[in-house]
Amino acid sequence: MNISFKGLGRSVGISVALALITPSVMASSFVHPGALHTQADLDRMKTQVAHNAQPWTDGWDVLIKNSHASLNWTANPQAMVYRGYDGTHRENYAALFNDAAAAYALALRWKVSGDDAYADKAAAILDAWSKTLTGIDGTSDKFLASGIYGYQLANAAEIMRSYERWPAQDVARFKTMMLNVFYPMNHQFLLHHNGQKIDHYWANWDLANMSSMLAIGILADRRDIYDEAVEYFKHGAGNGSIEHVVWKVYPDGLGQTQESGRDQGHNTINVALLGAFCQMAWNQHDDLFGYDDNRALKGVEYIAKYNLGHDVPYTTYSNSDVTQPTISSTGRGNTRPVWELFYNHYVVLKGLDAPYLRMAAEKVRPEGGGGDYGPNSGGFDQLGYGTLTYTLK
Image (cartoon, rainbow, N blue to C red; front, side, top):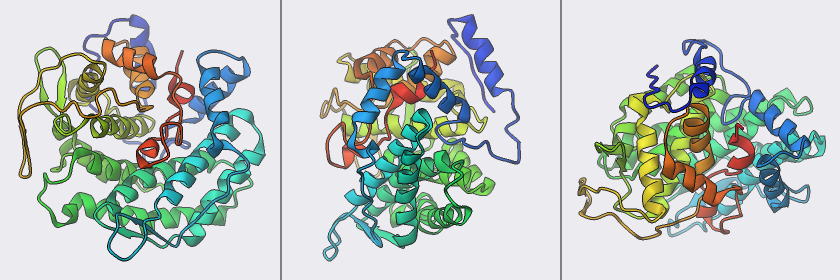
């Protein structure tokens, strides 16, 4: 484990952080629940909302106003999901990203409210898909579906796994679906990149499939799958490995990210996916936030600073497909609910100085979830609700 507290600004952050990272990374069993949220996280949300404490209550209010968190939600499972028009099959992946958002929101609402009706609804959505889905296809975009919706569904199920009225055989069927439909696509994409050159696909494609792989490894208690994802984060050849996501580090501590010259909408989805990956690993006692001298923080601070309207250094980026001599202003200021996770880890927990990350979190707070940022796939690329779920104090 590579842990760096370089630049810690508050002694309180040291003691808390060290207490959390003491458990051995070599433990053979997984923490459950232990993907994006541990039981301690869920207990904190419940307690703070019960006491009407801020900003958790504001985050809770956003959750319960979202239609995806309603008992009126009806699942829309598909036998085959298509993302990207292949000339024959109509795209229908919106059914999956809406139901994934609903399963997650309802699972959270159950844990915070204690009302089993929300657990029943979340379990019904997960069951509907595990009974129905047999594959994902389309254009190359199918690998975005296998990644983004894979990690989201696995996270909803990881929260739900403790629900006594979700029968063991239904949980097992759901795990089997994740292992048979999603994981093989995650693995194949990271291994072969759809037959393209290793640097062809943008970082978010790798990060999505890495996050799905990590979440499935945790959910299914598959150490081999989990380790495969962590190894790719550290040493993978594609653009999702950390040294390729944050490919140039400047003396001022900022790190230029791989999609900076493309557009800021995709640059900020990297914040969402990188955050999800690091948070899930952290909850299994692997500090990838701190890996390589907090390299992830340098990239996130770079993205936050530029999207807040400030200048950042930029070096021409080139790969086998593109040469980008300037940073892209397309989508600059793009709003995504992705900042609270990183802010609470680096600034609140570890006491590191990250002024632009702080400002980005304050700007978006309270963070909403799927459907609060538009009806299309971009509004569902991240699970959201970070003010409720990640605020530590």
